[in-house]
Image (cartoon, rainbow, N blue to C red; front, top):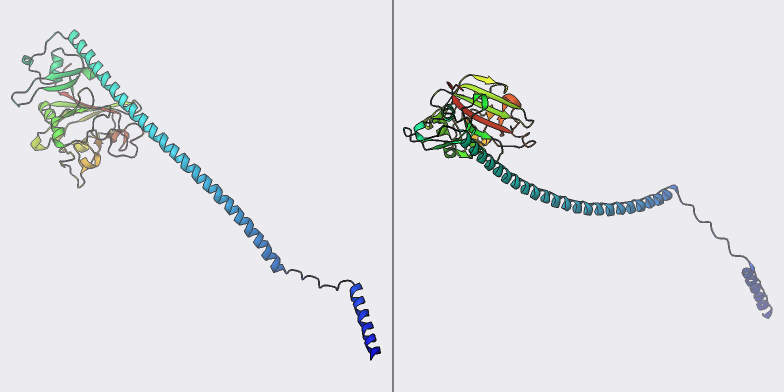
Length: 344
């Protein structure tokens, strides 16, 4: 029994010695990755890189948005400042025009006093500017016509053109500065409005009275390039208020292109509160003036005053289709009348 035990111990020692002295047991080599696993790993790397790029772009967009907002605020502030500056300039321009007009008026009065040899009195029975001209009033400017006792008309202040084609013209309308709105009601167009030294409408009642005898009409126009054109009509008359101040015209002559008043001949006057046109539309509302609207216009000399560059998309400006078309608003217009038999 002892012998068997020693033998077993001997074998056990041999096994332990062999296990300790023997190198590490061989390990299985790692499994190689499949193509699909390699592709998935690459996609994950690309996804991570895209996420990083998106994060960078988001940061850049955020910065750009913040900068754009700051720039926009700056632009708005500059525009507001420019608008304020423009208003101040317009105010100064208005003051300058007023002072210039007043100075011109004072000069005209001084010239008139120095040049006139005939004194204007009620005994002169002055009818219009042509009557003044025949009595040696030869300087263009503002005059006062005496009242008409027969018609019950009051004293009337007028502007006389004593120079154009012999003079003797009574100005019935002027547009040159845009400081007076012509989008007025029936009563204002009847009585007249504005300043005879600036923009004005003499008044339909006065124009009717001045055109009772055979009268010639002259329309002078100037565009924003400084070119001047005119249109004349051998006969001009305005009906009374019962006839809605209907327009009557004779033959056309001049260099203002096609006759742009012919379409308005024998047409009643319309305003924003009294629609007398021949159209379903209310032309006075559409064209923003008082005029002999037919349906609606070939001319609109009492439309909105648009300055250079402001009128190209509008049809309600101071238009004369025969010259510059329907969307060009003129820089200056004057309408003036004198008797047909006037002799300078």
